[in-house]
Image (cartoon, rainbow, N blue to C red; front, top):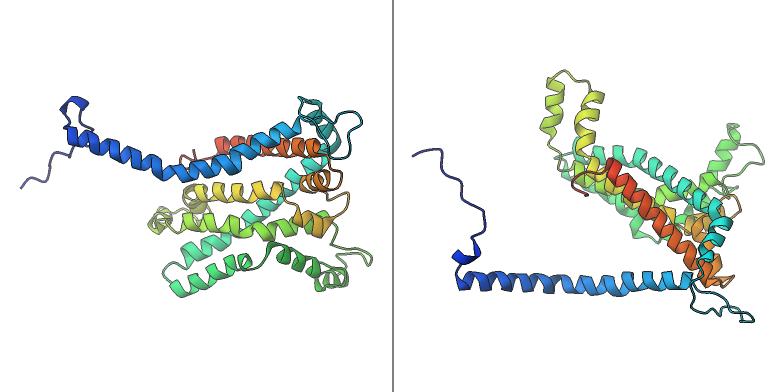
Length: 312
């Protein structure tokens, strides 16, 4: 029996050589496929596409002379965008800066955690399960409660401030709450599982024989990590950084509870204020649209620069 056998052809038959029953079966499968994606298409149309167009239209509204508070008329008032950008660009830049720092911190904390669970503890199912539960445990409580807990931990009367004052790392009248440090800590903690889990899912499929091969070729552990482990885990790193950076950029709760002063105001707080307090719907819509476009632009640049074929 020959070991070399002709590979089975995977090319589709030409249309003229296919039977009528095969053509009908293909058309039936095509119709089933369209029906399967129809609910998702309708959902995205109703809850994403239409709200985005409504937001865009509202951002161009204008306030007629003599109109009451909250009354606006459809128009093409493009100056709404220049007005909000001129007034709130510091908050927009600060939001991206906080989100970037929190993303880097979450990567520095989350990658070793994911590597430990997925690679070093591979085969020890019980310990892996316990650590995975600890990683996702924050999801078992409310986002607001978690942030409120951080406010208590970093409070002036809390243990962290007391220790830092005792070792002279913080002045006697120094504080952590209402600072950029507290907001970034809150962002990092709340979005850490979004960073860790994608990296774990990627490292869990890593073939550890490749790491052993690096050692057999006399590469030190750092070189093996840099040339083997990290490139193979980049899809998880890219997914984790996107899942962390995007929601952190528009975060409102951490900035409101842990910051809540002029130096820590993020763009989410400004949008909330323009919508519900100032009742400036066009301005708030314009800011929301600017934030969405800025995030989309940054994500495209990031994925094109560091992305992998799995994400493109």
